[in-house]
Amino acid sequence: MATAARPRAGVDEGVGPTALMVAAARAIETHRPDALARDAHAEHFVRAARSSAHWPVHPRDVPDGEADPLWGRLGRYFALRTRALDDQLLWSAHLGVRQVVLLGAGLDTRAFRLDWPADLAVFEVDRPEVLAFKQRVLDRLDARPAARRVPVAADLRGDWADALTAAGFQPAEPTAWLAEGLLPYLPAAAEQRLAAAVDRLGAAGSTLAYEARLGPESAAVRDSPVYTTARERLGVDLLALFDAGPRPDTTADLTARGWSTTVHTPFDFTRHYGRGPRPEPHDAFAADRWVFATR
Ligand code: SAM
Image (cartoon, rainbow, N blue to C red; front, side):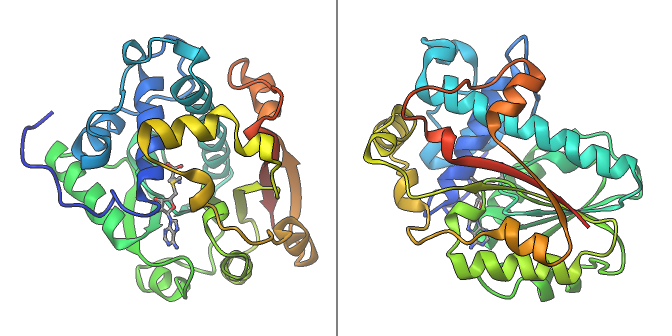
């Protein structure tokens, strides 16, 4: 990696470090012999940010391996989610979709990693600070996307749809939308507005994949090792970052709007791919649902 000065803070605050956590998980996964996904850029993001510069980026940095609650179990959860959604997006492209919108893109490098049709556009929506940090690291690496990549700086709690269309998004074309690791951080009203905007901008043939968390969680789940290790080792308090209010039923909302939905647990994908987290008592992942909607 180049040894230029680290980019200024921005990804180090608020919910930004959660994007670094997913990047670190992908960096570690990249070096596993049975990797579900490989991301050559991930470790560069982790090393470039002040808050994550010392985090693990390789399985040899994780002495307990898969038994480690943070980089073993949560890390493999992120890798499984990455792979399942890679496959879903590539399938949409295979069916002819030529626009992908990553809502809360964070340090996602799908625009670079995946084998896209040459005429496909990937819109990456996130906070300006996160996208600026990402761009500085990518520039330093001289990274070249495999699709037309369009960063869109916007707050997803506000009116982000105008920024997306101003960036060249075509509402009349079918789109593969993705909200991966985003909705739990948004207030319920913002999630409802997001679903309404996707419905408004989602032409026939569009898909939406998202991760939702059922709540509220029991005290035993809130004390589970996934949460406590992230807080104690990284200073990332996921439970404090998640929106504390009741969650909306976005699946019912989309169904009422005419979308077809299928709801899975992460464990369905552990079975499908043959690796990933398996259920355990007081499991933080038991509240997760991965929802696939089609118009
Ligand atoms: N989807 C990416 C992935 O899986 O690698 C990133 C997931 S990360 C856990 C959550 C991302 O959502 C962060 O990049 C954060 O900046 C973004 N995010 C959270 N709230 C947001 C908001 N109100 N507006 C824009 N982005 C937001």
